[in-house]
Length: 485
Image 1 (cartoon, rainbow, N blue to C red):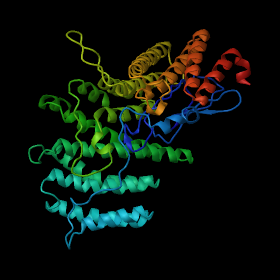
Image 2 (cartoon, helix red, strand yellow):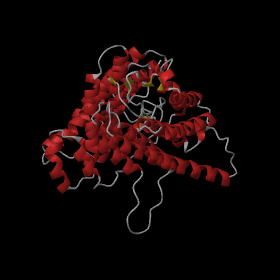
Image 3 (cartoon, helix red, strand yellow):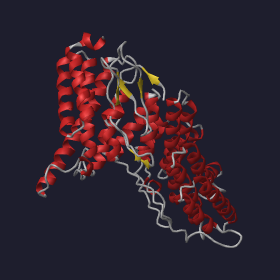
């Protein structure tokens, strides 16, 4: 990620890299007003990369230090689960010429013995044999099952490399599984009459892997940037995979008329803005679980909202706000739909889902003031989204606390066990952001009130770094010259 000096809000994201809203969720972004004395603000999407907030008088503060507790909590509305390494391989053939199952068991044993290179050799052999059977139509009774089995090998293979922090090799392994399914989808798009249409489960499997690949490229780019290299290629690859997932998940429910309208745009890889508008006319597709094969949870749980969230965050980090805003707004709408103008109101979404919508509201607020010198209108719009994030977060916090009170549960429930835990953190950051936005608007009185609110809540939850940062912001307001020294 490129660093830029600007006034920004830092996002609340999903933290675990294996979740597609998952293992990654979003963290809150904090506002950094433009100042000649401020250090460049580095923003990131990968959960392992933490940006700087600003340079206070005496030392720099990292978002990772302030919100390190998030990583321990595994915050995120779009949870994708942990890897399960105890798999059953009975679905795979094990003939004399194609001992796929035996190769997979050998790979698992080697991985358990901490021999990843040896395990990779077995995974590669198993995949090659399975690919041969797949090409012959002999890997499974149906093509859908064959796709599940073939990609299942690549997913386990990539997961093994990911577990030992070999990101580049994990990317290669996951991409090995992605390409055959993407080829099915693309073949049907190019020759809709001749090529059989991929099933919904096949598209969802490919989209899950595509988002995983995007996440890994973001992580790879962050590592390169930390080592002094460039992240341009990583961003480009992440955009390519995220865009593919968004387009294909949207395509699942488009009518023939809608498909005709966007066909040229999709083929030209047009800006996602039109995709976001088209998504307003579709019903949210329901994710299907993988029952035939036990694979990581993110494979079955990927949704359009997660893919849009990732792509929107990438564009936001790149300063391409005109592309980020419609994607993030659409993701918010899907998580927390506005009530109908007429008729009975539907029940509210679950608290974790609303809390993640609040997180995205906060992140959209950040995106709107990501320029070095945002105009007053952008600051005002940004503050509106931060306030909305705070309203939603506080409503969920009150609702959850009231429910615990009715059950006789004490308020001392650990933060990690609360269903509104993401809202607790978003409320702290949204309050802090409103303080920064007030500071940018030359309203120090309101700024101090927001900083006090943020710091008080952070201290109550035991987030001492966050509380200290709010206190330092207050001291900066009261002693601006000392802060510049």
